[in-house]
Length: 424
Ligand code: UD1
Image (cartoon, rainbow, N blue to C red; front, side):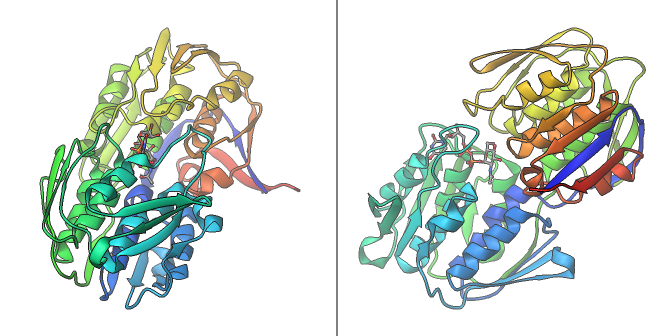
């Protein structure tokens, strides 16, 4: 099992290329199940979650091949040979539930394992299932699996009013509605850039969609979809994560491919804390102004609010801010597991329910720490950049789910960071 060792204190200067979005790619890949014709995705990130989705789609009969060192994915689902998404794959990655909508829409039936609990909260899939029920599906939950079928073999258009905003449920319903009979209206839909990206790809495949990026999406179902080629949108969470690197360690870093509109609420908070964020041709430049960053308060919200997926990393920055910051986590109920690890590095954090109060300290100290989930693991790496001495982050398989070559990208800017093989 690998660990990452960071020797803190080096200022960062240079540029970091931002990859295609993991979360967009994970919802674009299942779109292959909607058509017999090939789907080509460029700008794909090279991550273990993408390999998990590849395995899942292949288990259903899709052909998936990675080209150009994994940056291009060629997908084709001429025929679907298996309609069951097995527990062994689904338990590894919650986004596996996104095959349910396309399977139901294409062939009228599917059996998908329930994703089960997850380290950052209960994370049920009831909103996904309610959407399919509204579209006429009958659902039966047994033995840990959802058995879904559409009477007559085809879903029908419906008004789906989500009681709360869900990225995954919006995506699943959008995928399914493209082939439903009639018009579907998704109300209280999520507005994330990954949903806009999905709608744009589906439109290239012949889908009729309007309103993506707003809270009401209208889909006019069509009889069939065709092939398409689509570049995956920039990963706004990877972008935000690397924007924090010079903010925390000092220096100036250009984020190639970065766009302010993808991270506006987050960039505003960085600037409020005293970090410069400037548009440059083809990207964003982030540079810390002189002295410590200031304390800021953060509330996580659905897009366009501050993303929950940047909360842990922002906390790492605020651990060394001048003053007291309050972070309120409103999306997931158990997403402060990085806090006890940051405490081991000398941070001062008090967690009460969904609120963390962070009192900034002058300097963090390196320590052995353990990654507990994807975003928590990278927050510990960021904290290590600013800490005195060595920080050893273990269990980095969480990191590899969502960040490609983190040690190379930070190392190229002057960070002292290396991956080491450890026993066990
Ligand atoms: C996606 C992202 C994840 C991000 C999250 C919120 C992917 C692969 N993952 O996850 O990185 O942290 O959006 O921005 O894109 N909920 C229900 N019932 C449901 C579905 C969700 O109660 O059927 C709840 C969840 O438990 C959570 C909230 O709704 O509290 C938001 O979850 P959702 O937006 O669905 O997140 P995901 O799509 O799972």
